[in-house]
Image (cartoon, rainbow, N blue to C red; front, side, top):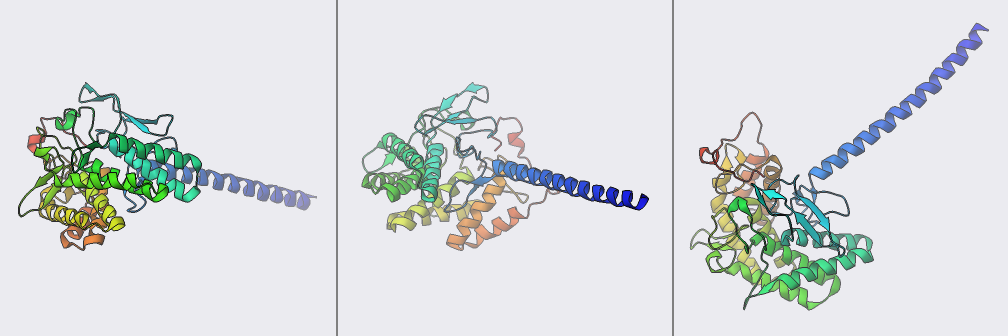
Length: 345
């Protein structure tokens, strides 16, 4: 009798153990999924051609957060979509100044790229319609200026003392990518024609209403925050994104002028890159603003992609140096920055 009871007890324990094991395994899988999801919220891909890592929100009803380059703190900006699928960025307050809900050409361009990729994968009618809407917004807001077109920001941006309207080399490039994508799907020449007009803007200097700082021997720098009276901030990630967009346009069209612009920009980045090094860490801009850890990783990623295209040794050198950054070697804060409110990305 005792033996029979013992066997029953053992069977009960075994069954209970199996149940407990299944529960533990399920909990572990849920935690892993949550952890993975949280990691994706911090870093995901918004350009499927370059797999560019960027802080974003994977909610299908939202858009990449730090794709909006005007955001000072990516966690504080709220991005929503209107009824046509076009994003609106609510900046709230930046350095005590109310900026509020705005249209950001970079955010809209990146959302269009997202719709393009989604349509390719799913043939979703909604994705197709949203791609048309975002691409048409870019068409309608690209201001014709003779032999080039320009997208302008219609709000002031206090961090770099930008007053409306201002321009962005990164926005010009991202919009080119989005419009080429629209042309690939829709086949309407107006999208490719406008992309070409946006490309032409890179030939125009900032002082003349464009986005480029030209030098005779050190290449051309494509400014992310460009205005006639603004500080020359030379934001690093914006320059690299612009270069990759120009290369993407060249890769699709084989236009020699795009290759020329890419080569001039690569020369500028090659000559300027050492100025962004801070004890093995990267600065966000030429003014000495430290990059956040997210943007530091983005710098490393973009340098790797540019090296894969150009085989420029300095890109690999800083990709490896910054990629090997260790927290035991903290970057050196520029004393001049301690008393001013700089954008900490």
